[in-house]
Length: 230
Image 1 (spheres, one colour):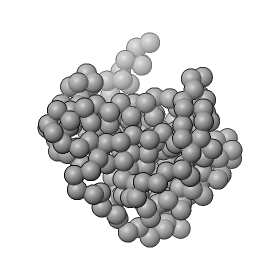
Image 2: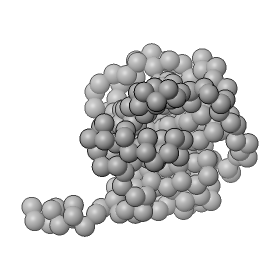
Image 3: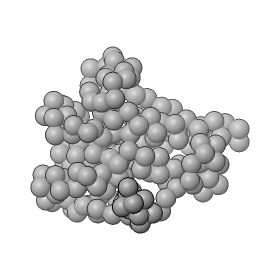
Image 4: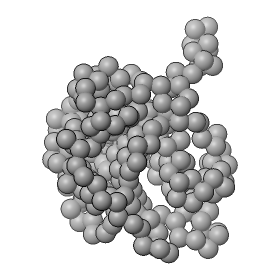
């Protein structure tokens, strides 16, 4: 069951906090792509004399976390976070999401308890599995990686999965499709916070498409035509 949500407000004039939730075997680009967007946004906002974001990478126990790709990410302990309110929580996905859910059941509990203290709860790729397991997606329309859609629907029939969407906003909950779609999601979040112009400048700095529209198909016709000619 989805918990109630009293949306806290960020303190005016203060940087917004973004917490990236790490766990073993998470996808590296799911996290680093989103982090880079917020980092670049902070640099641009500083140029304008405006507060940006403070970025925190945290895990249940803290310390080094090994990603699915084999690189290690250094983290602080989620329990040591003293941010009130927490502005944005981002949960990356994993190519081994079923096992990750089993191995990280305490993380599901933490997400459930933290929901009422976070202005926005978001996920990249199969990170939606964690939000769904925590009961945060019941009755909502969400996105996840197309290759995990069948698995997601079997596990969470109470959640409305949009198989086509790049990302989906449902009030304080945002979810995105696989891997690089986390960049699209993060640009949309920056736009929601600071406007289209800042988000466009961030995209330009990162040399990426401004952002794909949220309703663009994950398996787009151009990619499909390229694939079919192989």
